[in-house]
Image 1 (cartoon, rainbow, N blue to C red):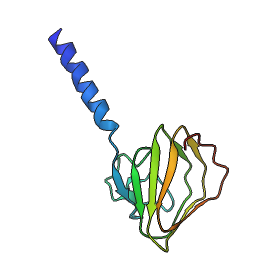
Image 2: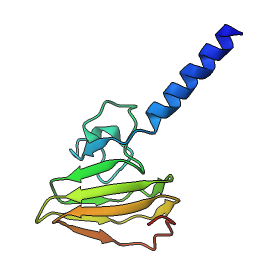
Image 3: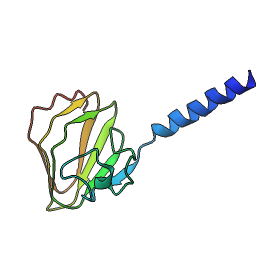
Image 4: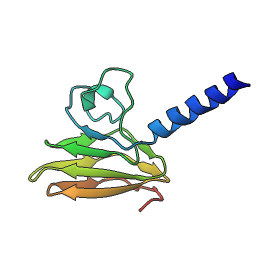
Length: 116
């Protein structure tokens, strides 16, 4: 009985940790335009890439070509002044997008995301 309670507690702690927002900066070290390539975020292969509730930073012109499915929450995008961030892909899901920074943001496809 004590073992199963410990397992449940550990699962809850792991789940709670997964929901914590994180900051990511695009480094462009992976496949061009591929959001879910950890190398583009300066991460090791197999690492988790940004999703809703995270904040992402772009310090250079980037065109994202891989479709994104945003879970519930708001993805915050911040790009530096005089940079151009283009989403030439579909953004869908329950999550939303918030824009910060002084750079330009272009959404090139019909984006059916339901968030704010």
